[in-house]
Image 1 (cartoon, rainbow, N blue to C red):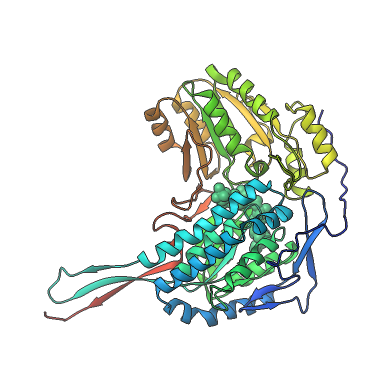
Image 2: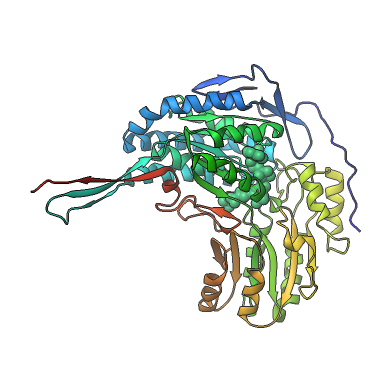
Length: 504
Ligand SMILES: NC(=O)c1ccc[n+]([C@@H]2O[C@H](COP(=O)([O-])OP(=O)(O)OC[C@H]3O[C@@H](n4cnc5c(N)ncnc54)[C@H](O)[C@@H]3O)[C@@H](O)[C@H]2O)c1
Ligand SMILES: O=C[C@H](O)CS(=O)(=O)O
């Protein structure tokens, strides 16, 4: 029986926050200046594990967003005229500063978003890799020349689109910023970043590290409490100075921003929600299947947009896979992200945890040790739950159709041929990531090509990398981030120049 947590929150005293010098208490970076919330209060940042206040950030709104856009606009001409090679050197400087302060950044990230420290360290590496990747790619964004006509020369050049608005989520408080800002800055754009209200401190720490590398106004951070996020978004969307908007977050908010940007016809990048099918075929190596399932499903307690979310296991191997998976789930260690050996931390806040608990039916498989640990730790901790799903029912349970964004494993058996499982997997409005575990790679390739997603891992549970385009299809968004020529193109315009009547 699942117990429901009483809606309480322990407001502890200020936690023993590592007094990292990376955060300027109560201030945010606009136009190269660290500014406080002159007209507004600051908002608290909580440790998801304990409810303690671990810091604060200015609660900015429309007026401050306008100021940030002005700062980005003032810095734009000089930055876009900086040579790509010099921009590259500066980005490399930013990258080196991030890597140098890896441990402080990781600990700060764990304090404000709860992810286990080992994962936070991994995110610092992952996030830094985007800055490095775009530092290398920027100087190679060259155009083309057509000299085929005797009386003219035609060429294309690639130019920065202008100021870019970047709105990012809490689940990768560093990586989602660098995946966007690295590309935009390398392209010659200046940026206004609006981080999530749950994780502003990591964004501000990133900005602090950029100070030595980037000119004032190149990177601006507007922090806001949840209630002010729409106001910040509306200003970014409505401003004709902001020529590109890149958003990572829920499909619901993404659709709203999509509509809001229509008035100024911006270049738009939307990385939205997913609901990844995880297909295990009858010839799969089941140890590998469990390894991939655990890596994908329980990364950041299931709070990533590419987590496996709908497990489709061939009838012939279902019982064996389920048994092995349960044994692997049992080994998960629930606890605070800063504690050694923890592999499953809290969800980002009690609202998120309550939502996930509401998706778990009472007959779900939950280990007593996990349920007891979650109860003892507090209302943001959710015990991992395996839910058997009968696809023959008219309406699958909510945990099947909804993006769980938590440690929930909806497990369904499928019979029939590959066409059958592809049809089930594609039966969803989103299409971000998918996973296939199979022995026959030709068969897996055929299935992967027919899955309606932007990305697919075959015999691999973790697929995200700076070197490949990240993004989805259908309601998972538009555009790609990272990769060769993909991510940076979101911030470039291709201009065609024709030099006529030359009569060589
Ligand atoms: N595709 C991806 O790369 C990706 C990455 C992370 C999260 N997500 C998705 O996001 C969801 C959970 O993340 P979340 O809760 O941070 O998403 P969210 O959409 O609630 O918030 C994302 C960001 O948008 C801001 N925001 C919220 N409402 C806004 C508005 N009206 N105008 C402007 N900004 C607004 C938030 O303050 C935050 O900074 C899940 O669906 C998850 O799949 C997708
Ligand atoms: O949650 C969304 C992130 O984009 C996941 S990843 O860090 O890119 O894998």
